[in-house]
Length: 116
Image 1 (cartoon, rainbow, N blue to C red):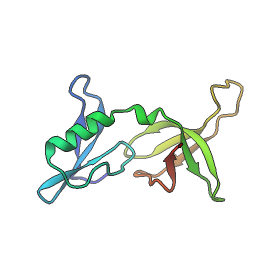
Image 2: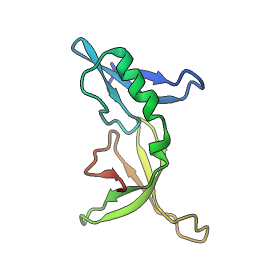
Image 3: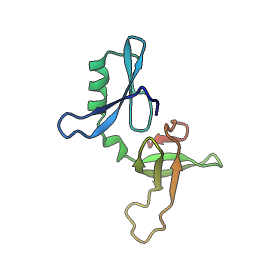
Protein backbone atom coordinates (compact mmCIF):
# COMPACT_ATOMS: atom_id res chain seq x y z
CA UNK A 1 0.00 0.00 0.00
CA UNK A 2 1.28 3.43 -0.86
CA UNK A 3 1.29 6.25 1.68
CA UNK A 4 -0.89 8.55 -0.44
CA UNK A 5 -3.77 6.06 -0.85
CA UNK A 6 -7.02 7.31 0.68
CA UNK A 7 -9.26 4.78 2.42
CA UNK A 8 -12.76 4.43 1.07
CA UNK A 9 -15.43 2.99 3.35
CA UNK A 10 -19.04 2.24 2.52
CA UNK A 11 -21.32 4.91 3.88
CA UNK A 12 -23.89 2.54 5.41
CA UNK A 13 -21.61 0.32 7.54
CA UNK A 14 -18.18 2.01 7.28
CA UNK A 15 -16.61 -1.22 5.96
CA UNK A 16 -13.35 -0.66 4.08
CA UNK A 17 -13.89 -1.51 0.40
CA UNK A 18 -10.70 -0.10 -1.10
CA UNK A 19 -8.58 2.96 -1.63
CA UNK A 20 -8.37 5.89 -3.97
CA UNK A 21 -4.92 6.71 -5.26
CA UNK A 22 -4.32 10.32 -6.33
CA UNK A 23 -3.07 10.42 -9.92
CA UNK A 24 -2.67 13.71 -11.75
CA UNK A 25 -5.93 15.64 -11.39
CA UNK A 26 -7.95 12.52 -10.54
CA UNK A 27 -7.93 9.21 -8.74
CA UNK A 28 -7.54 5.50 -9.44
CA UNK A 29 -9.82 3.09 -7.53
CA UNK A 30 -7.83 0.29 -5.85
CA UNK A 31 -9.58 -2.83 -4.50
CA UNK A 32 -8.71 -4.76 -1.34
CA UNK A 33 -6.30 -6.99 -3.27
CA UNK A 34 -4.35 -3.88 -4.28
CA UNK A 35 -5.53 -4.01 -7.89
CA UNK A 36 -6.47 -1.02 -10.03
CA UNK A 37 -10.18 -1.03 -10.83
CA UNK A 38 -10.23 2.18 -12.89
CA UNK A 39 -7.98 4.37 -14.92
CA UNK A 40 -7.72 7.99 -13.76
CA UNK A 41 -11.25 9.17 -12.95
CA UNK A 42 -12.82 11.84 -10.77
CA UNK A 43 -13.43 11.35 -7.05
CA UNK A 44 -17.11 10.43 -7.44
CA UNK A 45 -16.49 7.78 -10.09
CA UNK A 46 -13.72 6.21 -8.00
CA UNK A 47 -16.04 6.09 -4.96
CA UNK A 48 -18.92 4.68 -7.01
CA UNK A 49 -16.67 2.00 -8.51
CA UNK A 50 -15.55 0.80 -5.08
CA UNK A 51 -19.09 0.94 -3.66
CA UNK A 52 -20.44 -1.12 -6.58
CA UNK A 53 -17.57 -3.60 -6.31
CA UNK A 54 -18.21 -4.09 -2.60
CA UNK A 55 -16.77 -7.17 -0.92
CA UNK A 56 -18.59 -10.01 -2.71
CA UNK A 57 -15.65 -10.74 -5.02
CA UNK A 58 -13.65 -11.81 -1.95
CA UNK A 59 -16.09 -14.69 -1.34
CA UNK A 60 -15.88 -15.98 -4.92
CA UNK A 61 -13.58 -18.89 -5.77
CA UNK A 62 -10.19 -17.96 -7.19
CA UNK A 63 -7.24 -19.77 -8.72
CA UNK A 64 -3.72 -19.56 -7.32
CA UNK A 65 -0.73 -20.15 -9.59
CA UNK A 66 1.59 -22.60 -7.87
CA UNK A 67 5.38 -22.64 -8.26
CA UNK A 68 5.15 -25.40 -10.89
CA UNK A 69 2.83 -23.22 -13.03
CA UNK A 70 -0.33 -25.18 -12.31
CA UNK A 71 -3.48 -23.55 -10.94
CA UNK A 72 -5.14 -24.48 -7.63
CA UNK A 73 -8.72 -23.60 -6.71
CA UNK A 74 -8.66 -21.47 -3.54
CA UNK A 75 -10.80 -19.21 -1.38
CA UNK A 76 -9.61 -15.92 0.04
CA UNK A 77 -9.24 -16.28 3.80
CA UNK A 78 -7.70 -12.95 4.86
CA UNK A 79 -6.96 -9.65 3.18
CA UNK A 80 -4.87 -6.79 4.55
CA UNK A 81 -2.24 -4.40 3.24
CA UNK A 82 0.32 -6.58 5.04
CA UNK A 83 -0.55 -9.82 3.20
CA UNK A 84 -3.23 -11.87 1.54
CA UNK A 85 -3.94 -15.42 2.68
CA UNK A 86 -5.79 -17.94 0.59
CA UNK A 87 -6.80 -21.47 1.42
CA UNK A 88 -7.18 -24.50 -0.80
CA UNK A 89 -10.88 -24.86 -1.54
CA UNK A 90 -12.12 -27.90 0.37
CA UNK A 91 -15.82 -27.37 -0.46
CA UNK A 92 -16.66 -27.26 3.25
CA UNK A 93 -15.17 -30.67 4.11
CA UNK A 94 -14.40 -30.35 7.82
CA UNK A 95 -12.12 -33.40 7.67
CA UNK A 96 -9.92 -32.05 4.87
CA UNK A 97 -6.41 -30.84 5.62
CA UNK A 98 -6.43 -27.07 5.41
CA UNK A 99 -3.69 -25.67 3.19
CA UNK A 100 -3.01 -21.93 3.39
CA UNK A 101 -0.82 -19.82 1.12
CA UNK A 102 0.45 -16.32 1.87
CA UNK A 103 0.67 -13.84 -0.98
CA UNK A 104 2.15 -10.37 -1.18
CA UNK A 105 0.04 -7.23 -1.28
CA UNK A 106 -0.79 -6.20 -3.90
CA UNK A 107 -1.35 -9.52 -5.63
CA UNK A 108 -1.33 -9.67 -9.40
CA UNK A 109 -3.79 -11.56 -11.60
CA UNK A 110 -1.01 -13.82 -12.84
CA UNK A 111 -0.68 -15.02 -9.22
CA UNK A 112 -4.33 -15.02 -8.16
CA UNK A 113 -7.25 -14.79 -10.55
CA UNK A 114 -11.01 -15.16 -10.27
CA UNK A 115 -12.16 -18.65 -11.19
CA UNK A 116 -13.89 -18.44 -14.53
